[in-house]
Each structure stands twice: as C-alpha cells, then as structure tokens.
Length: 321
Image: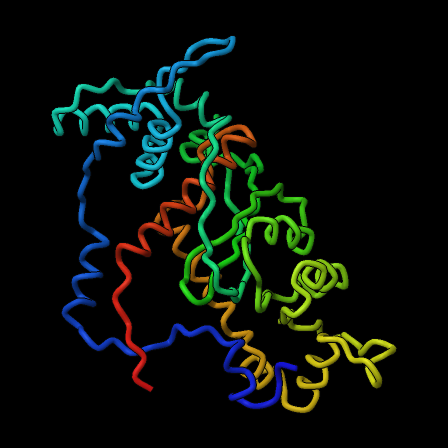
C-alpha cells in the first residue's frame, strides 16, 4: 500500500527534485532555449526527396522527413502554411542547398496521412501524471470574431497529456472532441505508453471504476492515485479486501486531504499541469488544422517539439542527499 513510510514509498516517488551544482551550466541551458541553430545533415539532404514508388499511383515528390521538418518549423514559429513555405525556402537559400520547397497545399495534403514517430519512453517503469486542456479551433470566420466581436460560439477540442514524472517529457497525447469525458481516455493514453507504469495520477474526473479496471488490466501493480469525490463512500469489501480507492478514503479520513496528497504522491500531478502550461505558451492555445487527421498530426508534431526543447534546455543534475 502507498501509505506506510517514506522508505516504503521511495520506489514510487519520481527522482526529479535535485539541486543544481553548476550554475554556469544551468544559465547556459536556459540561454540555449532561445538560441537559433539550423543545419541539414547529409542524411536529411539525401532523404529530402521521396523514394521512387514501385506500384500504382502518383509519385510523391517529398519524403515524410521533409514534410515533418516543415511542419515542425511551422509549430515552433507559429506560422501559417504559406509562411512556412517561405521560411523553408529562406533557410535552404541561406544554407546554399539545392533543394526544392514543399508548397503550402502539399504540406496540408500530406499532413493528412503523415506518420509521426511517438515519443520514446525507455525501459524503466514510469510514473504517469495525466491532465487535459481545451484547444480552440482557429479556422475560417475567426477573423470576424477578432474584428467585430461576433457572439458566434467558438469550436474547441480537448487535449489529454500523459507525462513521464522522472523526465518531464510528454509520453502520450490524445486529441478528442469536447464531448468526450476525461475518464474514457485512459485506454488510448495507456496504448501509447511502451513499458510498465508504476503509478497513474490524475484529478477527480478519473474517480471511476472503469478507470481503475483499465489501469489494473494493463499494469496490475500500478498505483492509481486519484482523489475520491467529496461524497465518496467505501466499497462493500473495504473491511476485508480494500481497494486502492478505499485506502485513499481511509487516509483522507484519518489524516486529511492535504496530508493524503503528500503521502500518496498526488502532488506530482503538477508536472502534467506544467506541460499543459508549456504547450499553451510555446505552441499555442489553439489548433490551426481543419480536419481530424491533420489536427492529430499537428498535436503529434507539437509533442515532439516540446520534448526536444526540454532536452536541449535541461541542465545536468546531481543528487547530493
């Protein structure tokens, strides 16, 4: 059970809170987040053009690598497709590369079917804080709202993020309609996580029996750290075979909700909230694409961008106590 002593819970708590020992390297890491360095490796130059198709159908001119590169720069600089086309062209000219530039319609069309590599989790078990947020749809008619203050109801979708608490990286992301509830997205999120999960942490919207069942079916030994609702009652078997939820309820009753948060490790959910904040500050609080599959590609590209930025700007830590 997760409420014994700090020594018993040590394997369950992520190993991230460490002191900085070299402030010069820390400052350099912060500055590197604002640096701009663009280069094309020999492999990228060679793989810019698509391979010759053997079967039927039109021959693609650009490889998936070229399309993913363009869409990545679009996400980083928050550009429209035509401006992305111009940015790629200027970079190729500055680097002196004799490569053609994908036009905006090609980028839009290829985003519909582009396969984006999922984040790599690694072999170690992960602590998985989960959070969600709304993303508005930026499409035709948006300028009417900005210019004339139209009262037309804006469309939006819900983004669900799962974070590796040990590294801070986003390991899974799911985009749904605004009608989908949070608890129904546990299965899609766990589908995108390779390896074992030590703990699953989220807010009270996940206080459901099917959430516990889905986590237990995939990771039987995982802790489900979800705050019970204020009117929650123990199960009928709480006295003889208590569930994790029953243990949470007993701890809240005996020690209070704040102490339960510290004892259970629920406060690590703040890492998922931090990723949501980074998403909105770095990427944006909206979606530029118009179709479901292009929006899914946009979300996958943005996930890789944030993870890459975190790797480039992360200082080196050393545990001293």
